[in-house]
Length: 189
Image (cartoon, rainbow, N blue to C red; front, side):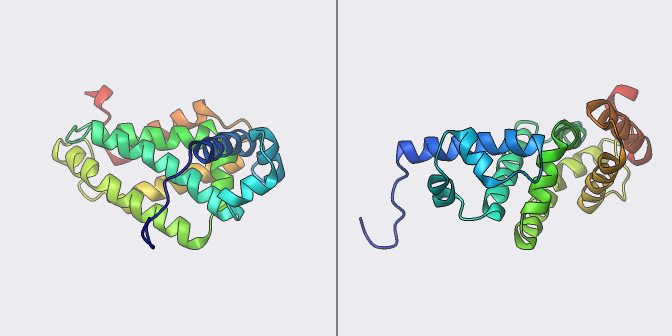
Protein backbone atom coordinates (compact mmCIF):
# COMPACT_ATOMS: atom_id res chain seq x y z
CA UNK A 1 0.00 0.00 0.00
CA UNK A 2 1.31 3.43 -0.87
CA UNK A 3 1.95 5.92 1.85
CA UNK A 4 -1.01 8.24 2.47
CA UNK A 5 -3.65 5.67 1.59
CA UNK A 6 -6.03 4.60 4.28
CA UNK A 7 -5.83 0.96 5.21
CA UNK A 8 -9.05 -0.95 4.66
CA UNK A 9 -11.09 -1.29 7.83
CA UNK A 10 -10.98 -4.81 9.20
CA UNK A 11 -14.32 -6.52 9.74
CA UNK A 12 -13.69 -7.01 13.45
CA UNK A 13 -12.79 -3.33 13.81
CA UNK A 14 -15.99 -2.36 12.01
CA UNK A 15 -18.02 -4.67 14.27
CA UNK A 16 -16.37 -3.14 17.33
CA UNK A 17 -17.14 0.38 16.14
CA UNK A 18 -20.77 -0.52 15.45
CA UNK A 19 -21.08 -2.19 18.87
CA UNK A 20 -19.65 0.90 20.56
CA UNK A 21 -22.03 3.25 18.76
CA UNK A 22 -25.06 1.05 19.52
CA UNK A 23 -24.03 0.77 23.17
CA UNK A 24 -23.41 4.52 23.41
CA UNK A 25 -26.93 5.21 22.11
CA UNK A 26 -28.42 3.00 24.81
CA UNK A 27 -26.18 4.19 27.63
CA UNK A 28 -26.50 7.91 26.92
CA UNK A 29 -30.24 7.69 26.28
CA UNK A 30 -30.58 6.48 29.87
CA UNK A 31 -28.03 8.85 31.42
CA UNK A 32 -26.46 11.66 29.42
CA UNK A 33 -23.44 11.88 31.72
CA UNK A 34 -22.72 8.14 31.90
CA UNK A 35 -19.04 7.21 31.97
CA UNK A 36 -17.27 5.92 28.88
CA UNK A 37 -16.46 2.74 30.80
CA UNK A 38 -20.18 1.92 30.82
CA UNK A 39 -20.25 2.21 27.02
CA UNK A 40 -17.34 -0.23 26.75
CA UNK A 41 -19.00 -2.64 29.18
CA UNK A 42 -22.35 -2.50 27.36
CA UNK A 43 -20.59 -3.05 24.01
CA UNK A 44 -18.83 -6.11 25.44
CA UNK A 45 -15.42 -4.60 24.73
CA UNK A 46 -12.48 -3.39 26.73
CA UNK A 47 -11.91 0.28 27.37
CA UNK A 48 -8.72 0.16 25.29
CA UNK A 49 -10.80 -0.87 22.25
CA UNK A 50 -13.27 1.93 22.93
CA UNK A 51 -10.52 4.53 23.17
CA UNK A 52 -8.76 3.15 20.09
CA UNK A 53 -11.89 3.94 18.10
CA UNK A 54 -12.87 7.09 19.97
CA UNK A 55 -9.96 8.72 21.83
CA UNK A 56 -12.32 11.01 23.74
CA UNK A 57 -15.97 11.63 24.49
CA UNK A 58 -16.20 14.45 21.94
CA UNK A 59 -15.25 12.13 19.07
CA UNK A 60 -17.78 9.52 20.18
CA UNK A 61 -20.49 12.17 20.38
CA UNK A 62 -19.51 13.51 16.95
CA UNK A 63 -19.84 9.98 15.51
CA UNK A 64 -23.32 9.62 17.02
CA UNK A 65 -24.32 13.02 15.62
CA UNK A 66 -22.96 11.96 12.21
CA UNK A 67 -25.13 8.83 12.32
CA UNK A 68 -28.20 10.93 13.16
CA UNK A 69 -27.42 13.29 10.31
CA UNK A 70 -26.87 10.39 7.89
CA UNK A 71 -30.42 9.19 8.61
CA UNK A 72 -31.77 12.67 7.84
CA UNK A 73 -29.68 12.85 4.66
CA UNK A 74 -31.15 9.54 3.47
CA UNK A 75 -34.67 10.77 4.21
CA UNK A 76 -34.01 14.04 2.37
CA UNK A 77 -32.69 12.14 -0.65
CA UNK A 78 -35.66 9.74 -0.66
CA UNK A 79 -38.14 12.63 -0.50
CA UNK A 80 -36.26 15.15 -2.67
CA UNK A 81 -38.59 17.63 -4.34
CA UNK A 82 -41.58 16.66 -2.22
CA UNK A 83 -43.42 19.61 -0.68
CA UNK A 84 -43.86 17.55 2.49
CA UNK A 85 -40.17 16.70 2.87
CA UNK A 86 -39.42 19.54 5.28
CA UNK A 87 -42.30 18.64 7.58
CA UNK A 88 -41.13 15.02 7.58
CA UNK A 89 -37.53 16.04 8.33
CA UNK A 90 -38.56 18.40 11.11
CA UNK A 91 -40.74 15.66 12.59
CA UNK A 92 -37.79 13.26 12.48
CA UNK A 93 -35.54 15.80 14.19
CA UNK A 94 -38.03 16.48 16.96
CA UNK A 95 -38.73 12.75 17.24
CA UNK A 96 -35.04 12.14 17.90
CA UNK A 97 -35.02 14.85 20.53
CA UNK A 98 -38.13 13.69 22.37
CA UNK A 99 -37.53 9.97 21.93
CA UNK A 100 -34.06 10.06 23.42
CA UNK A 101 -33.47 13.37 25.20
CA UNK A 102 -30.56 12.00 27.23
CA UNK A 103 -28.74 11.01 24.05
CA UNK A 104 -29.37 14.40 22.44
CA UNK A 105 -28.11 16.14 25.58
CA UNK A 106 -25.04 13.90 25.68
CA UNK A 107 -24.27 14.66 22.04
CA UNK A 108 -24.74 18.39 22.53
CA UNK A 109 -22.74 18.57 25.75
CA UNK A 110 -20.13 16.02 24.72
CA UNK A 111 -19.34 17.40 21.30
CA UNK A 112 -16.79 20.10 20.92
CA UNK A 113 -17.68 23.53 19.61
CA UNK A 114 -16.20 22.73 16.18
CA UNK A 115 -18.17 19.49 15.88
CA UNK A 116 -21.41 21.22 16.89
CA UNK A 117 -20.79 24.05 14.40
CA UNK A 118 -20.09 21.50 11.65
CA UNK A 119 -23.29 19.59 12.48
CA UNK A 120 -25.33 22.81 12.38
CA UNK A 121 -23.74 23.81 9.05
CA UNK A 122 -24.51 20.42 7.52
CA UNK A 123 -28.07 20.46 8.87
CA UNK A 124 -28.73 23.93 7.43
CA UNK A 125 -27.44 22.77 4.03
CA UNK A 126 -29.58 19.63 4.21
CA UNK A 127 -32.75 21.61 4.98
CA UNK A 128 -32.31 24.33 2.35
CA UNK A 129 -34.02 22.52 -0.58
CA UNK A 130 -36.86 20.93 1.45
CA UNK A 131 -37.64 24.39 2.86
CA UNK A 132 -37.74 25.88 -0.66
CA UNK A 133 -40.05 23.10 -1.87
CA UNK A 134 -42.43 23.64 1.07
CA UNK A 135 -42.41 27.40 0.47
CA UNK A 136 -43.09 26.94 -3.26
CA UNK A 137 -46.09 24.76 -2.39
CA UNK A 138 -47.42 27.38 0.02
CA UNK A 139 -46.87 25.12 3.03
CA UNK A 140 -44.27 27.25 4.75
CA UNK A 141 -43.82 30.95 5.44
CA UNK A 142 -41.74 32.67 2.77
CA UNK A 143 -39.39 34.18 5.35
CA UNK A 144 -38.56 30.85 7.01
CA UNK A 145 -34.87 29.88 6.79
CA UNK A 146 -32.73 26.87 7.75
CA UNK A 147 -31.53 28.93 10.73
CA UNK A 148 -35.14 29.06 11.92
CA UNK A 149 -35.24 25.26 11.86
CA UNK A 150 -32.24 25.21 14.21
CA UNK A 151 -34.08 27.64 16.49
CA UNK A 152 -36.99 25.20 16.63
CA UNK A 153 -34.55 22.51 17.75
CA UNK A 154 -33.27 24.78 20.51
CA UNK A 155 -36.85 25.54 21.58
CA UNK A 156 -37.59 21.82 21.81
CA UNK A 157 -34.43 21.39 23.90
CA UNK A 158 -35.75 24.04 26.28
CA UNK A 159 -39.11 22.34 26.59
CA UNK A 160 -37.49 18.96 27.22
CA UNK A 161 -35.20 20.42 29.86
CA UNK A 162 -38.13 21.85 31.80
CA UNK A 163 -41.04 19.47 31.21
CA UNK A 164 -41.15 16.78 33.89
CA UNK A 165 -42.89 14.22 31.68
CA UNK A 166 -41.48 15.23 28.31
CA UNK A 167 -41.62 12.57 25.65
CA UNK A 168 -43.15 11.81 22.25
CA UNK A 169 -46.51 13.41 23.15
CA UNK A 170 -44.68 16.58 24.17
CA UNK A 171 -42.80 16.55 20.88
CA UNK A 172 -46.02 16.13 18.91
CA UNK A 173 -47.59 19.07 20.75
CA UNK A 174 -44.54 21.26 20.16
CA UNK A 175 -44.60 20.39 16.45
CA UNK A 176 -48.29 21.23 16.22
CA UNK A 177 -47.72 24.62 17.85
CA UNK A 178 -44.70 25.32 15.66
CA UNK A 179 -46.48 24.39 12.43
CA UNK A 180 -49.35 26.71 13.24
CA UNK A 181 -46.80 29.51 13.44
CA UNK A 182 -44.64 28.74 10.40
CA UNK A 183 -46.97 27.22 7.85
CA UNK A 184 -49.77 24.86 7.03
CA UNK A 185 -49.49 21.16 7.68
CA UNK A 186 -50.29 18.87 4.78
CA UNK A 187 -52.97 17.25 6.95
CA UNK A 188 -54.69 20.64 7.39
CA UNK A 189 -55.36 20.86 3.67
